[in-house]
Image 1 (cartoon, rainbow, N blue to C red):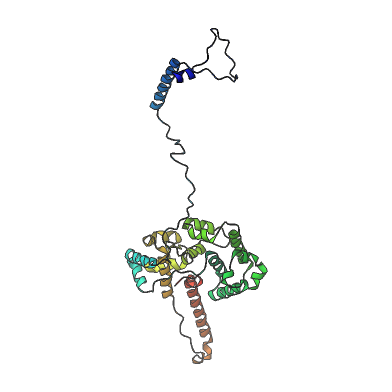
Image 2: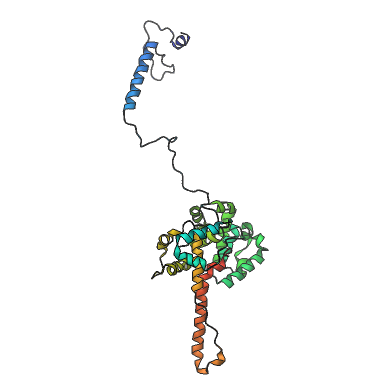
Length: 334
């Protein structure tokens, strides 16, 4: 009774005045109990009718099905190869999965994936070594460390402090200087950091690193394998790996990069180690330089033959450098 009396409207005169306009501020009177019951019945009928109508499933509520977010996860797929026992697990998997590769595994010592440098330092080193023969790149890198004051001084701020003229004096081209500065600026601005690089998944990392000038897919693959020890990276565009796959399976032609995923599918989730053995296979098949010829043993009329032989030696040595360059230019190759 108390609740009903509170909900009852005030007594109205017998002859109510005309209805106020819609804009009036006074609220409408509360319904009487009978009217409220009728209203409730009507509401229930309306609700039942609405329930009997087909539901619109095309627009689910945000609570039941939240919108998908971009796939930018920060988890590393698989333990790094630098962890104890990971290389052994990889070798056991590859030996069982690919009998052809097992023979190559037996012919070589297992790899060691340990990088002494932090990601920024490794990326700087990779840029400095690009497009240079190993000895020339090593000389530039040594002068670069001396200019900064040692390996501990290879930081983004220190690299930004070096002018193109400073870098030019130690053999770094203006183009490479711009690459180094672009990498350092992305670190200083927070776009990149060592901790983020270590924790990014492979796809996100490739996307972020290729934003840096001078760093392409091949450099990213080498960095992920030898600096971060990622276990399942296939450098499908690397000529050495492609030639190794050709030799391994006796193919007539060098496989195209687009064919490599299918050919190396059985190596998952340790394609990095499989690629390492392809470099070793190529290295073992590179023709060795012929023994040096004693000039005194040749008649004077054979000078042209001797010159041609020397040219062939130089070409063979250059081919060897091109094949095994990934083994030399990056740390942690073991």
